[in-house]
Length: 393
Ligand SMILES: [Zn+2]
Ligand SMILES: [Zn+2]
Image (tube, rainbow, N blue to C red; front, side, top):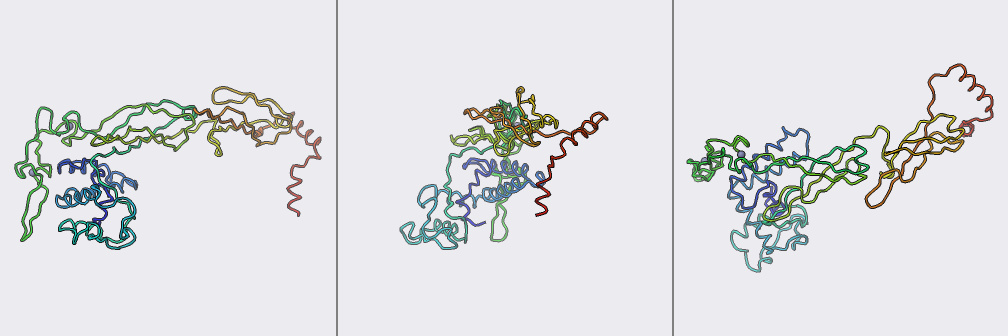
């Protein structure tokens, strides 16, 4: 990872913590996400795997006080508007390895100590995405949440109000997020004095490493909360009603604004996206050309097609009479107007009825005789005349 990536990434958002989060909060958020997203827990799920990598990367920076300080400073520079944001960095940022001239930018020589070092690192990498700098900000819109919903065919066609239950992680209400059993409080870790880190010297170098006694949290919980097991985070379940518009199709997503995760720092909540699965109907389908049209295949007898007839055909809510003219071909589709999807905006689909000859698998003697007589009477009708004529040409 190059530090140039830092201006494009929001590690706090990745971990779902505020930019002022304590080391403890960051660690907790990471542990929880790492558990949920771990490839072992999500075999074959590429999205989870990518999130897992992103979360690990974010934690790698934010858990290291020195790196975190640099990251914050880098982001603050861009958020402060001292460097042109968005597209069009002068000096060809993103155009492939050109180095940014700090002197020009800050109107002075050198750019000034640590600042220059940070920016120097930021722009030192080659390649990268053009102009994708995203300024960091305190307020953060909540994350979008995805959910799924299975509907009957009827519900999808007609529209419905469907209650769903959503589970999402939130502060444990039992312990108020402290992780300690109600009535008790966590005590400060005596080993690290509540910092969560201990210093270790090795030759000329001093290392900070997570305190083993408190696992980097800075606190010791003698009596963990029975609800969340000491994490301070538990799964919250809420119920809401999804208004499914008439005509929704399998695989479509319904957006519920502001029903996602709550925003931070007064920012708006994310959205909830509900992916719809539609159970196929025993009789009806949706037209591939226009999903507002319903399809239905109706078995008919040969004589109904040949002589013409009036069929009683089911629709989604009742039945309809369909007149078949004499001499109708098997496989022909009739359009029954207005018996498809009725959308809220007034658009209406049709019912497409396809007739298909059903052949009896057994005929008694009388029926066989009648058919032989029929064959004799219609000898001049050769349905394959054109087909064989075409083959000879
Ligand atoms: Zn400790
Ligand atoms: Zn709890």
